[in-house]
Length: 288
Length: 266
Ligand SMILES: Nc1ncnc2c1ncn2[C@@H]1O[C@H](COP(=O)(O)OP(=O)(O)O)[C@@H](O)[C@H]1O
Ligand SMILES: [Mg+2]
Image (tube, rainbow over all chains, first blue to last red):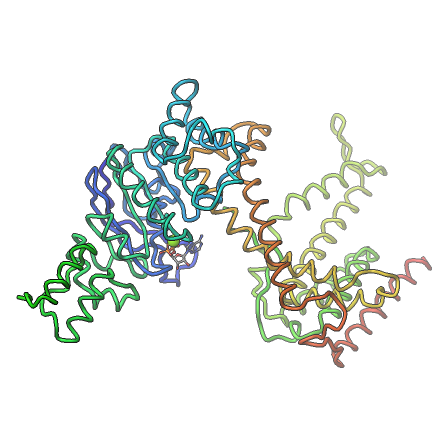
């Protein structure tokens, strides 16, 4: 499903006319079906507020959203059908687990949407398999006895069990150890491809954003201040630093090399293998 | 929605009322509470109104704030008035079917309404002008003499201030969990009472779990920082009755004693 936002505004303090502080301010975006977009910005820049508009947890106070066939504005009602299409993984999603067994927790969403019987069972089974959770071994276990990384996977599976077409991931790797983090990101990439999802990926980690996404929106004070193809956006390393954001590791390394006068090329973000190859070339004296 | 809850709101101002000792404010609020039930004629309520208006003025709290604070209590007030009006026996003024309104009932209802009105205003003034921490300090101070009778004054005050400290955190947490379950298709609005109550389970369980985790962490952090309860603990701000406190307490006490004696004598 494609997603279009047209001049969307949201203010938390609606009653306070003097306040110029918006949760999000005049946001427009256009995301094609099947793309993965990154949303970056420092804490408090409005990323979560924006994401919660995508499944109408917040309704735009001005402007509108078009999500597939749904048009959402400040008067929208009957949001269940939209929420079926947009899966929302909050920050620390494991906080929302509440059932005695993993199976029941995964069943909560689909049941609310009216699924039952075989349909329900296969939705749950599919979600667990996609998250690499062993269905037979784990379905009757308590979600609370799992490790942090496993709990996170169960929580994400509980969203996938609703078979969404759009997946919103709000800092999905926050607080995970490096291995769990990498496993999760790899898993998310394969799920995205398998299910042909449109993905919104909110993150503080520029390398993850570079790795996972195709198009990036940079936010500051509720506004989109920079957007573009991932390669283009990460070339703006000064702008990003001014916004208290980092740049991918590779750009950082290239910048250091440049400062030392052993590299003259552009500061492109790149995979670590390409970066290693480039440095190897420099060392062999083939820098051109 | 849930974010609108404002329990024990405190508004900072540099006013005379704010600067009073919290114990003074708690005590005069209690005196006021008793006093208001010992009064039963309009003239004296006018004096009470003047006293209240003066206190509000001196506290520098915007009048709108106080009026808004009355709104949620309105149904309770109306209910009390109606109950009193209908269910007091005496000389009938008006009757229709099984409803009978008596002169005594009307009087009582009117006075009850007025009393609740003043009660709410005065107690909200107490929390509006006293920060939660100061308030618990005040309660601890007032309970301290009871330590001799094994009343855990310090523990009670500490529990209260921790509870107050975590109210906003819990509200944030509830908001977040509600949204997460809504995103999974949960519906908290429709259905009958039983269905609505059941729909709270997915909120309450995560909330309890996180509250227990937080409590555990906080207890550990407090222990790590050497908290051993009351013994050997000093205060950052010692409570002290100033002259103004003493004068006000004296005046209120005299007034209350006068009202009590009058009540007994009449
Ligand atoms: N529930 C809320 N009530 C009031 N203000 C909020 C709430 N949630 C977020 N805000 C404010 O809105 C702004 C954007 O917050 P948020 O969308 O959470 O940013 P981010 O996810 O980028 O950290 C911040 O200034 C924040 O303080
Ligand atoms: Mg956020």
